[in-house]
Length: 73
Image (cartoon, rainbow, N blue to C red; front, side, top):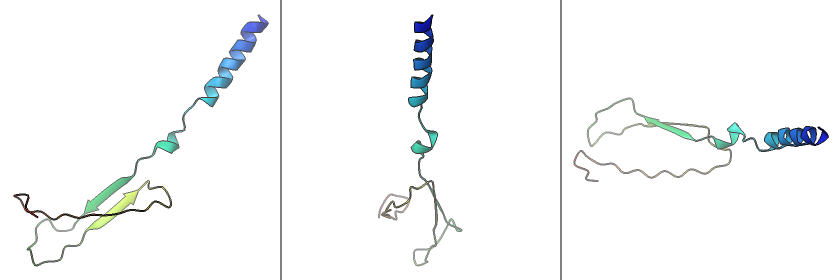
């Protein structure tokens, strides 16, 4: 009886130590939007970037490729 009690207590303690923390696996979310959907090649277009769940101190690097409907740069 005593052995079962000790094993039960040990089992309960090891379950608590093996639990994963949900906050450690956050994924960053990036949303890009523009107020206009069509523009001419000589116009300047403004993009709005919204980033959430980004860890503090992380450096971001952006690379842009503008392509037409046929995939040409």
